Length: 197
Image (cartoon, rainbow, N blue to C red):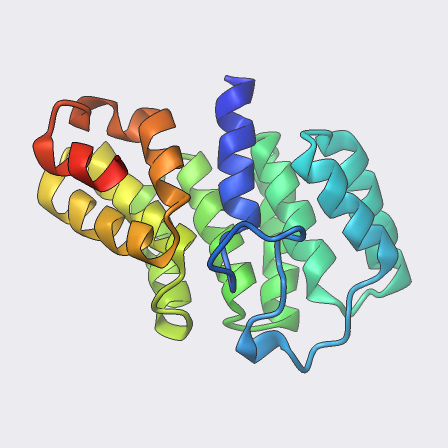
């Protein structure tokens, strides 16, 4: 279970603005380039989150919020950490604050999508992934997120269509598709095999 959470987290962290998994999860997209860099505590929180140390990440994101209460990054990522810890009310509060500070920002939308996905609310996740695609139509991990929703629903053709687009945007997506349970029932499918080889 923790292995799957680490994979999920890595996908979350690389969700927006990058073709390959970045060293920090919310590297600036075109829309975000005018936003000042978040505090050092946020960067430390990202490192802790990537290492799977969610308690330390939450503490560091809280420090970042104290240092820069108008910066959405730490709210968005603390919300994700709290969602990963199944503390959904607290997560919702943080993500709402991030949305208030940076309406429609792709990284915030992506974290909302993960918030809903972690709770099995696939329609909510799908809607927020679509919001990311409006600004970043080739965002590999968002395309992959949509592919996993279709796969979880047993909708083979759209799942593979989105998976194909995701892999075209970032070939590393194929590794996630091979490893994660979302596509377990697809392993004998010839099109899936060709996509992930």
